[in-house]
Image 1 (tube, rainbow over the protein chains, first blue to last red):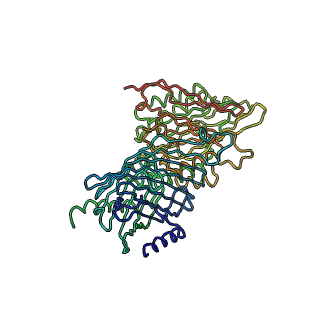
Image 2 (cartoon, rainbow over the protein chains, first blue to last red; image 1 turned 45 degrees about the horizontal axis):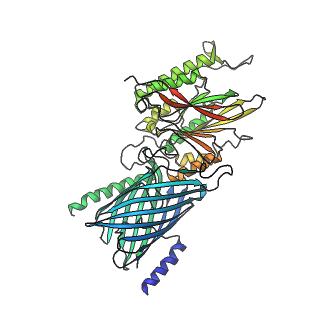
Image 3 (cartoon, rainbow over the protein chains, first blue to last red; image 1 turned 60 degrees about the vertical axis):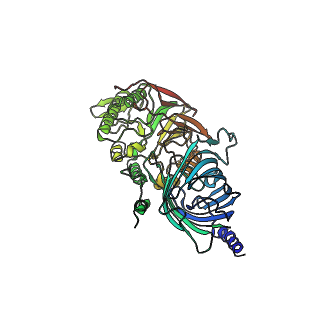
Length: 250
Length: 340
C-alpha cells in the first residue's frame, strides 16, 4: 500500500514539477535485483547552452525486468527553452561475466528540435561492461535527421534529410567506491548523453548516487560538461548542465 | 585512508578543478591543446576590426559573369608549393577572388613568415596584372574606363584573398600569427555585379569563425542581431555563399574529425536556409563531400596540403556565377608535388 502511494506520488509530481528521468544517468548497478521487476526513474536538468541559452528539462524512464537477463525500457524527455522533445525504447540482454556484467543494449531514439524544425531518429546498438569500479560502453549509432517543414519542391528523402555514416559510441565511467555501495561518486567521459549520440564531441563530468531512507529508492545526479570541438579541435565551452533525479523500484 | 581510494580521489579533484573552468571561455577535457585565444575573444577582435576598417573589406565589382577559387587546409610549413600554385591558378584564370577555408598554416612563426611572403608576392603579381602604375605611388585599375579614374596607392589595393580561420590556425599562439596577417575571422563582403541590362545584382559572401567547433555565444548573438542577413538591402541578395572551416556533414565512417554538436548543426542548417544560401563551403575533414540539404548546396573540400595529398589532384574548386545568377562549379587540378 505504501509503495503504491509512493509510485502515484512520483507519477503525479514529476510531470507537474517538470520531471521524469532516465536510467542512463544512474551510475549504480543496472541488473535485476531479483525482487523488484519494475523501475521508474526521473530527473530534472538545467544548464546553459551556447546556441540556445539557459534551459531546464525533465526526463523519465520506465524499465521492466522480464527475467534476470532481459529487460525493456521506455523513456521521454522535454528540455524547455531549448524546446527539445525526445522519446526512446531500449531492450537489454545481460550476460554475467564472473563478478561483472556485460549488457547488450538496442535502442531507438527520436528527437525533435522544434526551434529549427529538425527531426532526428537514431538506432544505437552497444555493449556496456559494468564492473565494480568502472564501466565501459562501446557500440555504434545509425543517425538520420531531416527538416520537418520542407520546401515543397524537394523530396524529403533525397534533399531534406541526411543519414550520417555509422558513428562509434564510446563511454567510460569510474567509481570511487564499489558499485554496490549505498552511495558513490564517479567520473564519466563519453560521446553520448541521455538522448543524443554525437560523433567525436565528448561530454564528461562528475556523477553520484545514494540510497534514500525509503527502501528501493535512490537519489542520483551528475554535473555534465559538454565542450564543442572536443577531440579533433580545441575544446571550447558549449554546454554545462546539472541533473538530479530519483529512481524507484517495486 | 585506504590507498585504493587515492587515485579515484585525485581524479575527482582534478575533475572538480577542471569543471571550474567551464565558467571561463575555454576548456580542454584532456588538459592539452588549449587555444591561446578562444572564439569569444576572436569574434570580439574580428568584429571590432571589421567595424573600424570597413574600407579594407571593400566591394568586389564584376562585369557580368565571374568566377572564384576555393581551397582548404593547406597547412603550410616549409614548402608552400600548393599555396603558391593556388595563387598562380587564380591569377592566370582571372578569378575575381580567392577563398581559403582555414588551416592555412601550421602554427610556427617561420611558417607564417613564409605564408606572408607568399601573399605579398601574390599581391604584387595581382597588381601588375590588373592595375596600371600611373606614377611611382598610384595605380589605376585596368577595367576602369572613366576619363578621370580613381587612383589607389599600393596599400589601398586589396588583394582579394579571403580566408576563414581553422582549428590548426589557433593552436599555441596561432591566432596572434593568423590575425597579424588577416585581422578578422568573421566578416562579409558584397560582390556588385553589373548586369547586361544596366541593372546591378549583389551577391553576398559570408565568412564564419568555426575553428573551435562552435560559433560561440558572441558570434551567434551578432548573427541573431542580423549582422550578416543583409536586411537593409532592398530586394535582398541574389546569391549568398558561406565559407566556414568545420564541416557540417561527415563524409565517411572513418573520418575522425569533430563536426558541430547536435543543436549547432541544426541551428546552422536552419540559418543557411533562412539566408537563402546558394552554397556552403567547408574544409577541416580533408575529404571531399557534396550534398544538398533542403535546398542549400554543401561542398566539403579535400585538403590541398602537400603532406596529406602528395600526388597531384583536384583539390580546388572554381565556382562559376553567370550574369543571370546561375551558379555552377568545377574541380581545379593541382600539379605541384612536394620537393621531398
